Image 1 (tube, rainbow, N blue to C red):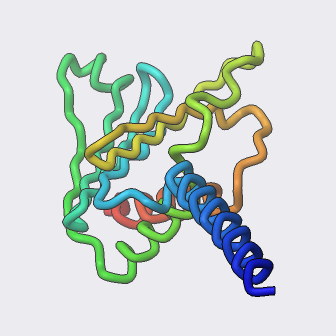
Image 2: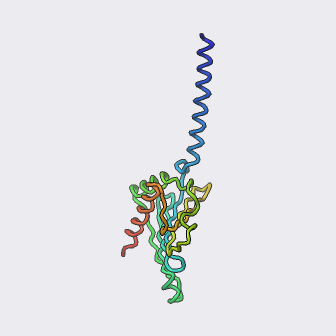
Image 3: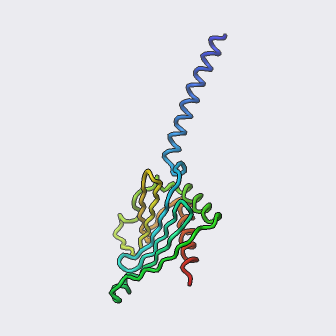
Length: 166
Protein backbone atom coordinates (compact mmCIF):
# COMPACT_ATOMS: atom_id res chain seq x y z
CA UNK A 1 0.00 0.00 0.00
CA UNK A 2 2.85 2.38 0.81
CA UNK A 3 4.47 1.63 -2.57
CA UNK A 4 1.13 2.34 -4.29
CA UNK A 5 0.77 5.73 -2.50
CA UNK A 6 4.38 6.59 -3.32
CA UNK A 7 3.79 5.70 -6.97
CA UNK A 8 0.61 7.85 -7.12
CA UNK A 9 2.45 10.79 -5.52
CA UNK A 10 5.31 10.40 -8.02
CA UNK A 11 2.89 10.38 -10.98
CA UNK A 12 1.03 13.44 -9.64
CA UNK A 13 4.32 15.26 -9.15
CA UNK A 14 5.36 14.60 -12.76
CA UNK A 15 1.94 15.69 -14.07
CA UNK A 16 2.01 18.90 -12.03
CA UNK A 17 5.55 19.70 -13.16
CA UNK A 18 4.46 19.23 -16.79
CA UNK A 19 1.45 21.50 -16.35
CA UNK A 20 3.58 24.14 -14.67
CA UNK A 21 6.20 24.14 -17.43
CA UNK A 22 3.49 24.48 -20.12
CA UNK A 23 1.90 27.44 -18.36
CA UNK A 24 5.24 29.24 -18.05
CA UNK A 25 5.95 28.62 -21.75
CA UNK A 26 2.54 30.05 -22.64
CA UNK A 27 3.19 33.15 -20.54
CA UNK A 28 6.28 33.95 -22.57
CA UNK A 29 4.29 33.73 -25.80
CA UNK A 30 1.98 36.57 -24.74
CA UNK A 31 2.85 40.20 -24.22
CA UNK A 32 2.18 40.45 -20.50
CA UNK A 33 5.63 39.20 -19.50
CA UNK A 34 7.77 42.03 -20.87
CA UNK A 35 9.34 44.67 -18.64
CA UNK A 36 9.72 48.35 -19.41
CA UNK A 37 8.70 49.31 -22.92
CA UNK A 38 8.19 52.15 -25.33
CA UNK A 39 5.06 52.33 -27.46
CA UNK A 40 4.52 54.21 -30.71
CA UNK A 41 1.34 54.67 -32.65
CA UNK A 42 1.24 56.51 -35.94
CA UNK A 43 -1.64 57.27 -38.21
CA UNK A 44 -0.74 58.49 -41.64
CA UNK A 45 -1.98 59.22 -45.08
CA UNK A 46 1.16 58.44 -47.05
CA UNK A 47 2.93 61.60 -48.27
CA UNK A 48 0.06 63.78 -47.03
CA UNK A 49 -0.41 63.78 -43.28
CA UNK A 50 1.04 62.01 -40.27
CA UNK A 51 0.48 62.10 -36.54
CA UNK A 52 2.65 59.99 -34.25
CA UNK A 53 2.38 59.28 -30.54
CA UNK A 54 5.31 57.93 -28.54
CA UNK A 55 5.14 56.82 -24.91
CA UNK A 56 8.39 56.14 -23.05
CA UNK A 57 9.03 53.98 -19.96
CA UNK A 58 9.47 57.09 -17.79
CA UNK A 59 5.85 58.05 -18.65
CA UNK A 60 6.88 60.92 -20.91
CA UNK A 61 5.13 61.25 -24.24
CA UNK A 62 5.66 63.02 -27.52
CA UNK A 63 3.12 63.74 -30.24
CA UNK A 64 4.33 64.90 -33.65
CA UNK A 65 1.83 66.16 -36.20
CA UNK A 66 2.98 66.87 -39.73
CA UNK A 67 1.04 68.05 -42.75
CA UNK A 68 3.41 66.94 -45.51
CA UNK A 69 1.00 67.99 -48.28
CA UNK A 70 1.10 71.67 -47.32
CA UNK A 71 4.77 71.47 -46.34
CA UNK A 72 5.61 70.56 -49.94
CA UNK A 73 3.88 73.72 -51.18
CA UNK A 74 5.61 75.83 -48.55
CA UNK A 75 8.91 74.11 -49.43
CA UNK A 76 9.72 73.45 -45.77
CA UNK A 77 8.98 70.94 -43.03
CA UNK A 78 6.91 72.36 -40.22
CA UNK A 79 5.95 69.58 -37.80
CA UNK A 80 4.00 70.47 -34.69
CA UNK A 81 5.30 68.74 -31.55
CA UNK A 82 3.67 68.33 -28.16
CA UNK A 83 5.57 66.79 -25.26
CA UNK A 84 4.60 66.07 -21.70
CA UNK A 85 4.32 63.58 -18.90
CA UNK A 86 1.41 61.19 -18.53
CA UNK A 87 -0.51 61.25 -15.28
CA UNK A 88 -0.25 58.10 -13.17
CA UNK A 89 -3.78 57.14 -14.27
CA UNK A 90 -3.03 57.67 -17.97
CA UNK A 91 0.20 55.69 -17.76
CA UNK A 92 -1.53 52.86 -15.86
CA UNK A 93 -4.29 52.74 -18.48
CA UNK A 94 -1.83 52.63 -21.39
CA UNK A 95 0.29 50.03 -19.58
CA UNK A 96 -2.72 47.79 -18.88
CA UNK A 97 -4.10 48.02 -22.43
CA UNK A 98 -0.71 47.42 -24.05
CA UNK A 99 0.02 44.37 -21.89
CA UNK A 100 -3.47 42.91 -22.45
CA UNK A 101 -3.42 43.55 -26.22
CA UNK A 102 -0.89 40.78 -26.91
CA UNK A 103 0.81 42.86 -29.59
CA UNK A 104 3.79 40.50 -29.74
CA UNK A 105 1.50 37.66 -30.80
CA UNK A 106 -0.19 39.68 -33.56
CA UNK A 107 0.59 39.40 -37.25
CA UNK A 108 2.87 42.03 -38.81
CA UNK A 109 0.24 43.37 -41.22
CA UNK A 110 -3.55 43.42 -41.49
CA UNK A 111 -5.67 44.35 -44.48
CA UNK A 112 -3.01 44.69 -47.14
CA UNK A 113 -3.88 41.44 -48.93
CA UNK A 114 -6.96 42.98 -50.53
CA UNK A 115 -6.99 45.21 -53.59
CA UNK A 116 -8.48 47.96 -51.42
CA UNK A 117 -6.23 50.98 -51.28
CA UNK A 118 -6.56 52.88 -48.09
CA UNK A 119 -5.56 56.49 -47.83
CA UNK A 120 -4.80 55.89 -44.14
CA UNK A 121 -2.50 53.44 -42.40
CA UNK A 122 -1.90 52.72 -38.71
CA UNK A 123 1.52 51.56 -37.52
CA UNK A 124 2.11 50.29 -33.99
CA UNK A 125 5.60 49.75 -32.59
CA UNK A 126 6.27 48.07 -29.26
CA UNK A 127 9.86 47.94 -28.02
CA UNK A 128 10.74 46.23 -24.75
CA UNK A 129 14.51 46.52 -25.15
CA UNK A 130 14.94 42.87 -26.14
CA UNK A 131 12.66 42.88 -29.15
CA UNK A 132 10.67 45.23 -31.33
CA UNK A 133 7.28 44.41 -32.81
CA UNK A 134 5.71 46.36 -35.67
CA UNK A 135 2.07 45.99 -36.68
CA UNK A 136 0.71 47.75 -39.78
CA UNK A 137 -3.03 48.06 -40.25
CA UNK A 138 -5.20 49.12 -43.17
CA UNK A 139 -8.26 50.44 -41.29
CA UNK A 140 -10.43 50.27 -44.43
CA UNK A 141 -10.63 46.47 -44.28
CA UNK A 142 -12.70 44.59 -41.70
CA UNK A 143 -10.59 42.93 -39.00
CA UNK A 144 -11.45 41.09 -35.81
CA UNK A 145 -9.08 42.49 -33.21
CA UNK A 146 -9.33 41.78 -29.52
CA UNK A 147 -11.37 44.17 -27.42
CA UNK A 148 -8.21 45.20 -25.55
CA UNK A 149 -6.36 46.08 -28.76
CA UNK A 150 -9.33 48.02 -30.14
CA UNK A 151 -9.61 49.85 -26.82
CA UNK A 152 -5.87 50.64 -26.94
CA UNK A 153 -6.23 52.22 -30.39
CA UNK A 154 -9.31 54.17 -29.31
CA UNK A 155 -7.66 55.37 -26.08
CA UNK A 156 -4.50 56.39 -27.96
CA UNK A 157 -6.37 58.39 -30.60
CA UNK A 158 -8.56 60.13 -28.01
CA UNK A 159 -5.48 60.98 -25.95
CA UNK A 160 -3.75 62.45 -29.02
CA UNK A 161 -6.86 64.43 -29.96
CA UNK A 162 -7.08 65.90 -26.46
CA UNK A 163 -3.44 67.04 -26.56
CA UNK A 164 -3.53 68.41 -30.11
CA UNK A 165 -6.42 70.78 -29.42
CA UNK A 166 -5.08 74.33 -29.37
